[in-house]
Length: 84
Ligand SMILES: [Zn+2]
Image 1 (cartoon, rainbow, N blue to C red):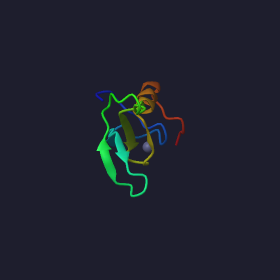
Image 2: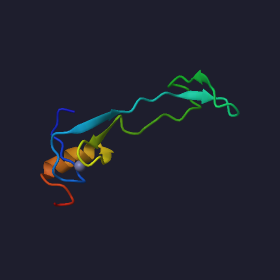
Image 3: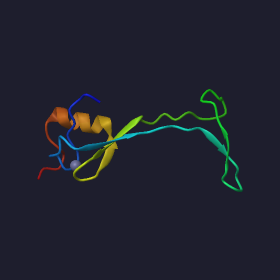
Image 4: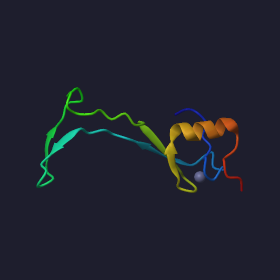
């Protein structure tokens, strides 16, 4: 997280971001009522584990949501894809 970001959409914002921590909660739901019946252990072989990113980032200026990597790569390139 201690890496410079640059928004890949607006291409100008390097300072304002919303960091979105993705928290995985494996559960079993009742199919009729939707009630959560059980917390499923992460090691349960019948439950596919979440393999998405832990963190997503929202640009605090234009509001686009992307992976952290997109913001980092854009900062390394030094410019956004869309120039203003
Ligand atoms: Zn932006």
